[in-house]
Length: 200
Image (cartoon, rainbow, N blue to C red):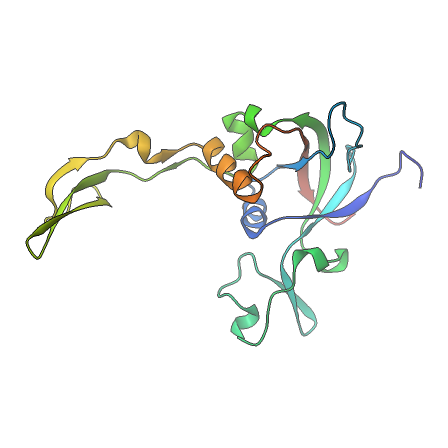
C-alpha cells in the first residue's frame, strides 16, 4: 500500500459516544499522542481515510445487536449472555462508518465550548434548585431538591446558586476525559473531525 492510499481501520468508542453519533451530535474525536515533544508519532489517519466504529456487540442468530441504545444490561434480555468487547469487533459487524475530514493537534484544555459540543458533550441546566431542612422525628436535617417551587415539607427553603447547578459542555468533556486518564488534560492529542457515511 502506498503512503497516499486511503486507510480503513476501526476506532473504539464508548456507548455514550456511539449514541451521540447516532443522534448527529458528535463529529470529532481526540486520541492521545504517545511520546514527548517534538511529535514523532504519525497520525493514524489522514483526510479522506475512513474508520468504522468499534462498539460493544453480540451476535444474535444472523444479526448483530449493539449495546448502545439497547434496553437492558444483557443481549436480548437473556441473563446468560454477555456483551462482547468493542475491541473484538471487526468491520463486517460495524453499523457506523465515518470519513476523516481533517486532522489537527490540540490539547483538551484549549478546547472551546463549541468544540466540546462537537465531541458529543452538552451543556446542562438542572433548573431551579432548593436547599433547606426536613423535620425527621424532631431533628432538622439539611436537604436539597429540584423543582419550580420548594416542596411543602421543606423548612426554611432557599434557592440554590444556579452557578453550582449549571454545567458547560467543556466541564462535561473534562469529566469524561479525566475519569478515563487523569493526567491527559494538558497533553497533546490528535483531533480527527469526521462525517458519517456509507461503508466505502
